[in-house]
Amino acid sequence: MSLMVVSIPLLPVIMMLSSRYRVKVTALCHRALAWVLRLVRGRVCVRSTHAFVFSQCTHGNADSILETFDLYGATQPSLCIGPKIGEALDEVVRRVCPSRVLELGMHCGYSSVRLLRLLPPAGRLVTVELDPLTAELGEEIILVSGFKHSQFQVVTCSSNESIPTLRPFIKPDQGTSEGFNLVLMDHNPQQYLTDLLALEKEELLCPSGCSVLLIHRDRRAESLGEIVDYIRAKPDCYCIKTELQFMTEVLFQKESTEVNMDQKV
Image (cartoon, rainbow, N blue to C red; front, side, top):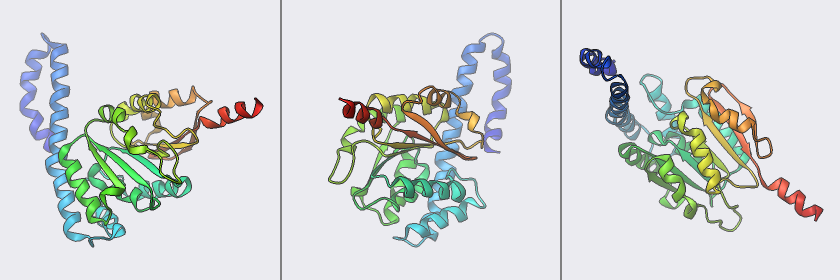
């Protein structure tokens, strides 16, 4: 509704200019829409979500934080993945037992809290969020949940800007492996393939095994487009492990072939 109110006054101007400056106007419209979406997200949804959760939850209790998020999402628009996807995410985390997790798309901290509460004591989460307000409020929610800065790191920039800077966050500690064991992509699906290629280039995916979770909020796995085609074209190191209504799990594994080659020698 808010988008309609903002957009309607612009229509006469757009129609008048479109025939003469079609390409430029189209680009301008995309930029204007992106700005409006960011405005609605940052100043309405994120602020109201944070205020509700902060005031209604039991501080220091991660489960209470999640329940309060879900209570808000039952009656109000929310960017959180919600309990259905959240439970599927929990299953993957329990199975993978990751020590290093990367989250692209923070969304006020809901999935960050879900992830952190299941990590081992030495585990660490790096969460990347483009919008500064969302990152600030999300970090506060994580701290209110009872987690400490030593357990997580918030990176406030775009995913493509952040990936080349992430290596210092995954230096192996005792009992942990090098690279991220789990990557959650819940930002812009059009950016998924670009970011996966960047993670490969920077060697940030754990070679012995990394689960990459792709969230598709429109409920169609086909919306993932190019990244699924890319994964299926590289069966030597990728395979699609599970496909759910809202989430696809991709397994990256590179070490097994190299180990076999070493054994032959």
